[in-house]
Length: 451
Image (cartoon, rainbow, N blue to C red):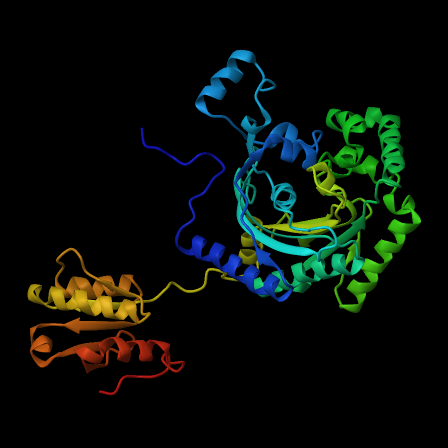
């Protein structure tokens, strides 16, 4: 039987791969302006990293997280019926999101020493969740994220949000077709009472709520705001709102975030039901949605503040804030707006061997071109000259360098413009430099070779 990729995964190549690389390059550029450096953490972490950070009661940990076992450990788990006897270092999971692993790395590597300046880092890579596969939602998906540790200032919240919106715009998304939702989830001083109020509200409407939300009343009542059940959504529209329960410090923090966004000219909508899906969020949370072309899957990224996560991962109290954006979701949004993130097919210079005895000269010409910084291709299958020219078209070659017996005898190569079909002779000893200069010429797309 032919092997196939697992359900909910995709092979990245061609235009799709170029788009992913373009997204990462844009992140490096935009985030670099804000002082962020890159980090890469392991694709798998100890299970406790995500249990501590994301929360045991979340759907991600309870239902969606892929567990990883070696062959022997898996046999032991099957025999025992549980992994409880495995040492923490043997209880592994593929990362379902990036923040918890980043914070673990920050604790382990002391990114924020006592009294040190805030650390700003960004990452890009695959994440894994065993959820129901649908358009824009895969089991191996890709995210770009950015995190800041070490400062509670609301100005930082606003800057992170502004940076995110700049990123979307640089990718090519129309800001007028996006909406930014913001909210405050309070902190340990005011949120517990609010959680209790929401839990009580759910229980009072138990006959109108789904079974999952009734469970959430005991585990994570705020997640009921995210329920996709229409009946639950109608009930929760009348639930107590966090904005009415914020303590003075959280209310002031939230007001300052909005003030800074206003000053930056960033349009936003306050959504008091926005809670995000993970337990580690405190105070500011935000989400970006597109307003057309995406249907129900309109969210393309979001994040928030997580001031208690460092402690949960074993570090000292350190405020933090960050966001993540999904590549697959953004691609859907870009396609809906007619934006080609991948860009045009890459071009090359194709070197044609007009006779078998010219093959060594073609090899040397390709070597010189590549060492001069020019992408070069050639035939490796003994094709005819006509077939090589067809191959040049398939490679989207802008130029062809033709080397035949006559050219060798004259110490020259024929350089053909594949657009105009005009050509000229170039000394072989100057070939690499002449072709490089031509390819790098800003006017190359409009210029013709002299006859």
